[in-house]
Amino acid sequence: MNILLILLLIAAMGATVFMLIKGIVTFLKTTEAELNSDESGPSASSLKQNKAMFGRIMFQAIAVIIVAILLIAKGGN
Image 1 (tube, rainbow, N blue to C red):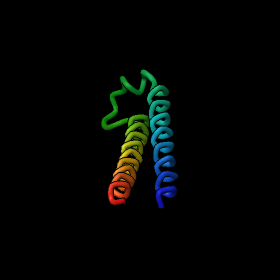
Image 2: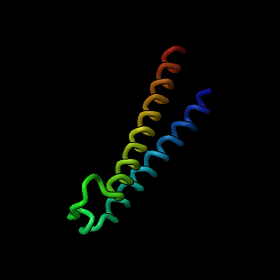
Image 3: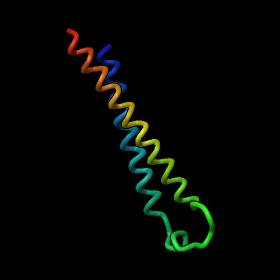
Image 4: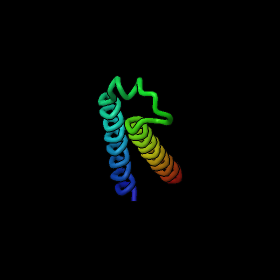
């Protein structure tokens, strides 16, 4: 069971890094015209950044939960 949890932890950490890079790339693609536009509400780029960062936070939470489960399982032995 520990091997499965470690593999899931590695996958969650990889997904966290992927979402972080995806959010940074989206941020870097934001143009000055989008930042200075007078349209109301968030731009499409801002929505993509928000979605990527929410995904990063979700995968980080999953990784923390897996680490907690591993620590609890290790402490019980």
